[in-house]
Image (cartoon, rainbow, N blue to C red; front, side):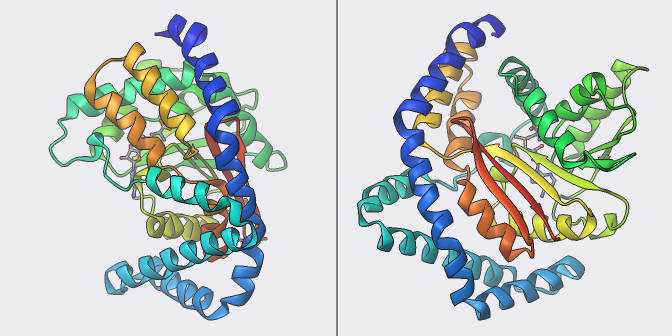
Amino acid sequence: MSTFHTALMTPLATQISAHWTAPLALRFDAALQAALPQLLADEPDAVAAIAALLDAAAVTPDAVDLPALDRKIRKLQKQLRARACAVQPSLRVVERLDALLASELPEIMDAAWAPPWLHAAEMRWLDKFNVDLGNYPRWQAMLLEAVADVPDARIEDVAAGAAGFLLWLAQHCPRTDLHLTASDYSADYVALGQKAVAAHGAGGLPLAVVQRDATQLAALAGQVDLIVCTQATHHMPPELVTRLLHQGLRAARHGVLIIDVLRSAGAMLAASVGTNLSTPAPPLMIDAMQSVRRGFLPAEFALLAHLAGAHDVRAYAQGPAYAVLRARRD
Ligand SMILES: C[S@@+](CC[C@H](N)C(=O)[O-])C[C@H]1O[C@@H](n2cnc3c(N)ncnc32)[C@H](O)[C@@H]1O
């Protein structure tokens, strides 16, 4: 798979995404980003109502009308799309195509019936994919930039699966003063991560692997400097991502770094071709495409970050296939 990715899949995916549909997705994204400040300024009541629900959900989620929170967020998302198209009517076709591409059908790995061996196989494949495509060094650079001025920085990677990224970081990081925790709400993945850490033995940075729901981070307040989340927000509806951001921004003084797949037809095609040729196992082939369809555009992350109370927000595409959000409260 390694040779295959290096020789064929990476250049192919890059060419398809960069020269074909990612530019359309990014043009649409630029229009959404441009329309965002005015939307937030024009809808103070909706923004305040969402903030109040998020505050309550951080303390007593069971007592909060979460479907109402979801509806309010989705309404603003729709308004943002409509505003972008009103300014640039030529984007209406792109908007329609993007709406057809976007899907909220769950991935197979999230199905209740998915057996533990499938979870383990998908996570192994994802880890290998990230290594082969050089994702981990790129994510490390972003993470180190986020805590450049923070000695002994405490970093938690939430929804970390089997801890693949932090395990790699622990072995390769040029800094030796970082305190790393990988968390996931799935006991299966936490057990896999703990096994992998034990297998690596001594050497590298210490890494704890714990079970935690990424939408219940309030208890971490003051115990963490940066919350990281990679390739996981596409498993969550916007309401859950907003709760993750809201609590992560308050728990971690240096904010939140999210990296996830960018929704674009080119990236979906590349994921399909790539998995078909490299790992032709139907669940992986379907999940690779479905991940991209469930992905976010950077402007969508920016909207959710503002609703979660961030004041310093940077949302951008990294290459043709990834969306990055860097958000802080101050
Ligand atoms: C595709 S995996 C990504 C794993 C890892 N971050 C990576 O980049 O390889 C998505 C992970 O999100 C986790 N997840 C989804 N919703 C979550 C939540 N609310 N809290 C914690 N973990 C969650 C799943 O259990 C799964 O391990």
